[in-house]
Length: 237
Image (cartoon, rainbow, N blue to C red):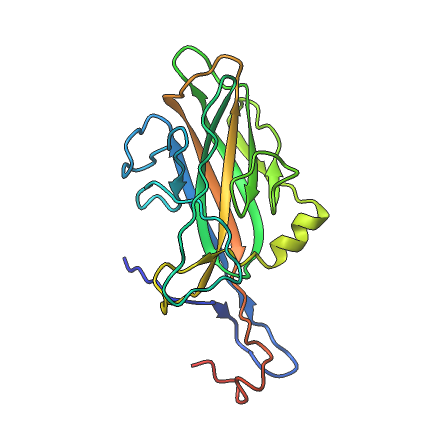
């Protein structure tokens, strides 16, 4: 079994240039499993806690920083890392979520939420879950830069995000949000995708069971395609 990590973007096909081109982009996916029975950062599936969100890809789930978007404010000495604190749990609402960093300017194809096990605190169960997907922490569909998911109810299954016209426009080329904390390292910027789950119940306290799987799918574009000045011979090496 082999593994590889490289900068991308990834294109494949037979004919890159000429009148009959069949080259296409690769669909990329990041995932995050939130398991509320896992209560220690670094555990596989760690589900987070009140005011604590997690990183994506389960390798393993660590505490995540929700950066304040800083587009256009590049600093050669590194960014001043500004963080947004997720809203604390309150009566009737529990907040959990994950932070995904993807290549800046990507096409955000879809966000899906799998309810694997309905959240419970041992005595009370969730009545539904909302999801708001943005480039920061938001608690309403109106404030979400990208998309949102209506209440999943309590039945195991998959829910897909819906996009408004403005959100579609943002999703075509994700926003420039977070500077690399290591100046001079590639990439210079990331797009930040924050998936905020608002778990609803009039009686639920801190959940100690329940599972959600978050799936973010996107396409990393090649911004040099068709640029004969940069690549006059079609040489991308």
